Length: 258
Image 1 (tube, rainbow, N blue to C red):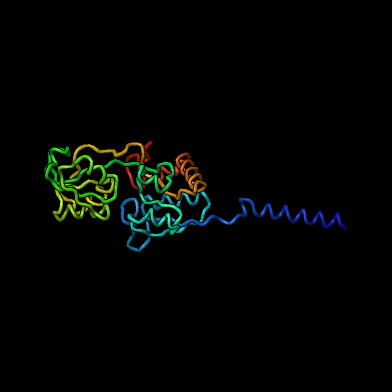
Image 2: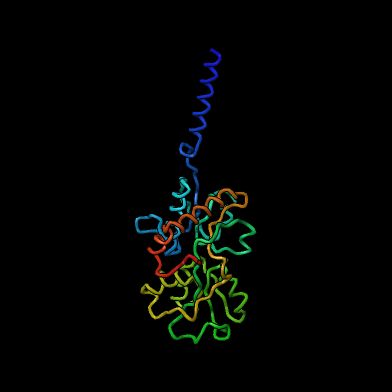
């Protein structure tokens, strides 16, 4: 009788172990901080749904990790404070990896890397050297690596700071700046291909700021386990061709930074 009871208890324990295993475990629930105002990476469709490369990457990584994910919209300037306040668990918002940001959060491996470009009225400037832009007004996204780059290299120009990347080109279009500085992709997609961008062009060669750093997914500094899972998911997506399939929806060049 005692032996039978022992066997029954052992069987129940084994069943519990199986149920607790990967195939029966409850999916990890994650909240993702996104912006929604950075086309073609993150944008809101007319029906109110979020879309863009960042959103597709986030959804695909969640599927790869078998996690249940939800999106939390957040102004970009407040992303890192909101992450550290546990408003969400990770940030997928085209956040460039910088030394300053790495003091506050940890980053995944880069999931894309595109250069920066100056944008101005076609033919307005011979080039984008500091000498050519001396005394001119340049508009750029505030609190960005590009703003820091201008502050360091264009000391004799006036720098105007915009709250969102799309506002860089709005300020330019209404004449509050002589030239804009932003993402080569966003300036092309959100401005130059639109009616308001008529007569404007990207100026000079592309500029890579902190080349090799790229754009990463941010997590809290105490969440190494999540960062490891994200890196594994990214590696799998790049290895199985899913990353290229997503990227090809938005870009006609390699954005992987490889």
